[in-house]
Amino acid sequence: MARTTPQTHGEILAAAARRFAATGYRGTSLQDIATEVGCSKAAVLYHFANKEAILTALMAPAIEVLRSLDDRIAAQPGPAAAQRVAAEGFVDLAVRFRSEIALLRGEFPELLQQPVFAHIQQISERLIDALAGQSERASARITALVLLAGIAETCGQFADVPDQDLGEALLALLRRALEPPVH
Image (cartoon, rainbow, N blue to C red; front, top):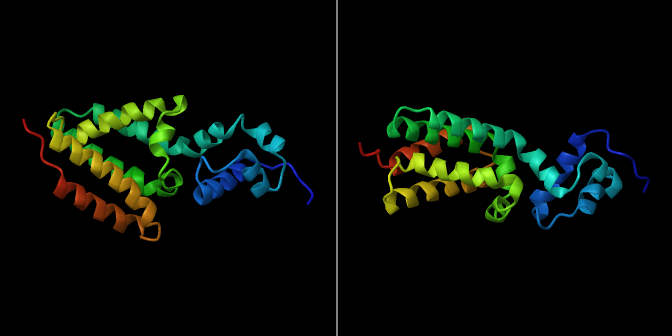
């Protein structure tokens, strides 16, 4: 098979996304991605320093939306407003980036330990805090964490459900499950 140089980062990213979806991040090598593209491993490395750089590029749009959501939550005047913005914003993010989230299923906790994603753990903690209505009660925090994890898992499982239908169902679930913040 004749090997060629990929024309764009996009070809490599698309191939990496397919491989990560099929065999997971850990189960995919740079050689697997190169084979999927039809080029050499060196050609992939010409575009990306390593596999982590590919994952970072794949996740960059979702991470930017997550950072923006974190800023919007922080700007809210109180726990009730922060909880509403967190719920609506996270559902929107999870639905919009469900294919990216699905790539990481089962590997997300381990990937969060990588230095490049350290800030995601901090944002996740603030998101849990907002969804819990700023409460320190274990029940509120457990509910918030289960909802976040469940929403991410659900979005990966129901890729065929239209965005609007999925988003409405998830928001309805959040509204039923979350306790209003105590003033």
